[in-house]
Image 1: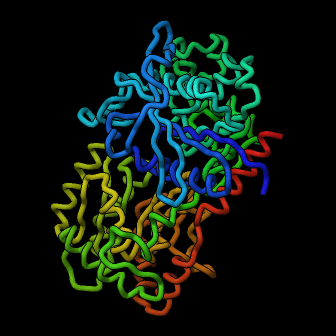
Image 2 (image 1 turned 30 degrees about the vertical axis):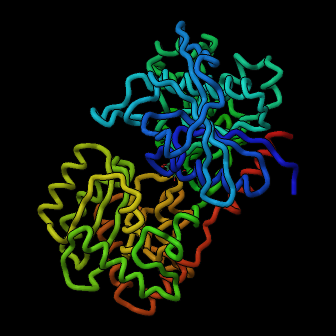
Image 3 (image 1 turned 135 degrees about the horizontal axis):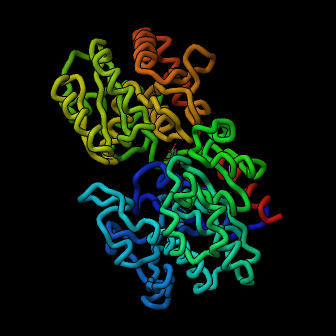
Length: 491
Ligand code: GLC
């Protein structure tokens, strides 16, 4: 084995502490796998108000007022809590940067009451970036690598290459910046830039949108030693497609040679129907008939009607346009004419919530929607559905299609980003699902019809389920690729 490395993995959300999407799953599973490979990896995130002291047995590793961090001209104090991620036999240490005023709220990026973005998200993640670096110094723990994730951590490489550039503690440390979604860029008004305390000359480098804003994501892309994104296909797309990347094209093409696509894995300790403690009946391919018990439970939970075995399509999604929500909505009247049922789970834009709630009333018993973010229901949907629909407009990686395959729930996806890298259309050898290319509700409906046809042919259907369930998307391979990149950065 190569030399054991010290890595700080920094993320704004980590399961089970805080989650709004796949970033939290990755930020929990990947560090565990890297630790299993024998490296000293620790993770760091903000200590949000939603994180329970008692549940996570938080204790201080840095006491209040020991850290004083500037935001523009003001100084705010912080303390650092510690806890562990311990799903496996392996424990990964978690540091949580605490400041009640900035993070002690009911919500991660948006307020749970107003459903609006917190107006001071610039300050919250400026403070976090500075806090991460100061924590390391205060603890005297010098990692080889700081692995940053998404815009919330984008300022870290910028600070290291400027304000901390002459600090002997930071000089040997290399940074990796992983893009989980290039559309969320952390753009703030140019006049907020002074709050970063970065050299004023940097502003022009970080500006976007006709210079009216500066971008935390751009800071990560400019200054990280190595950049990665979460699938090889998305890496290709963001280099080629100027539209995908909202004004970051220039910096991406400048740093193209330092950009690598590594497919996310999934955590089979959590997403595996053989051991899943949440679902009512466990199963694997040999006992696939037991999946039907989970289907009956899902039917009950979501008040579905219809004679068995009418197929169920599951959808678990943030209700935002890029997940293909608009084409689901416009396809719904046609889909409801087919012999199928749909269960849908998700929160997001209030206008989408309203439209799906109305659809539920209209198609009572055939379309059922719960406006919630609920891990238990998510497992029930994966286990009880026949299909999983994910018609994303773009998708850096996507995890639910991989969860679905392990549950023998056949994905129907639009061929984009990580969905291309993970789902093979049933028309090809080794098929695991159904894919379509054109982003339209017509294509979606045609593909669902094609899927229903295969579902009604027992031997073809069984073959598809077998292929899907046998796919191995565990983190093992991908974790090795990250470790190789860490070593490359240190060369
Ligand atoms: C973001 C992306 C999603 C990816 C996840 C984890 O949520 O939108 O495609 O799977 O991050 O990397």
